[in-house]
Image (cartoon, rainbow, N blue to C red; front, top):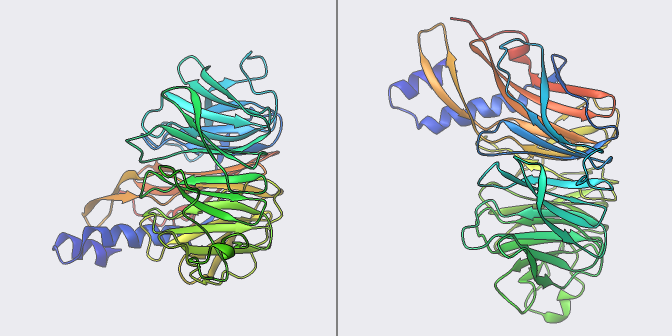
Length: 414
């Protein structure tokens, strides 16, 4: 640490090198922390969470009871023991509450004044955060498994929706209508993801073992389907039999730069693909236990070297290096299966060291995982020390992961 600080102060190193090194160190030192809790609002398991990227402060959660809760993750008490409070709730007493399980929640990427939820009650609702009333309701013919809004889109306001139907629906926020249908899958669509690099590129995964990549500006079908055997994509006949996995494909995640796409399937495999040409990179992650019949949400680190993948794996969270497939560690402490992972946005903290050096670190290291529920990781400043907490929700309560160096108070105080 001191070597990085000295080199940065002298202008010998790129400032990002210190950020990457510190982010990496903290990922490698995550362990269970018992000092954090979350208000218990849901009466059943939590299926999904999302943390807004504007401030990185508010978290949405959606439960099997149909309830949606907004939590404030910020700790203003500056005490080690802290309970994240529920700011507002769409509870069972609300006339607008979902009738069945909420499967996906997502903040509007550019403003915390709006969020979107989808449910097994065959609806997707666009909510006004101030009034907690739906500004728009989209009705579908089957259970809604997932939806996703592009984090970078400027030329469209489309929401991709995966349902029990074989078609992928594109809903326009501006017009409030379904404007396009993407046909190509032969089974339920379990996961959809927009590319963080190109705003018109969409990836979809289904129970038919296939992953399709689309350019939504084209009317001629998908760009290509991912083939685990890297077959010849120029042959139209092979397109009908290309499979990404030997079972249901229930997880999709682009890397932060959008150059690679990760997929998970019920064949207990995770694969890394080149998102430009759809080639399987053949990285071997070993057996990745996956028995989920619904969507599985995985996440990739940011500003680490190397980058890491956080994957729900039974009642644990497996941490792999992205490009080598090495299993780094298993985050244990859950009583039920983990369903969801999400990465926390960048958080600015100031670290005051006894060597009289002060430096601002842009740390994006905080991983959020959800158990059977849901998970979430956030960062908070404890005195003059930093701590990165990984919150883990389960039916009975909440557990947290934090780096061992911080739990042992190894950072000197000023």
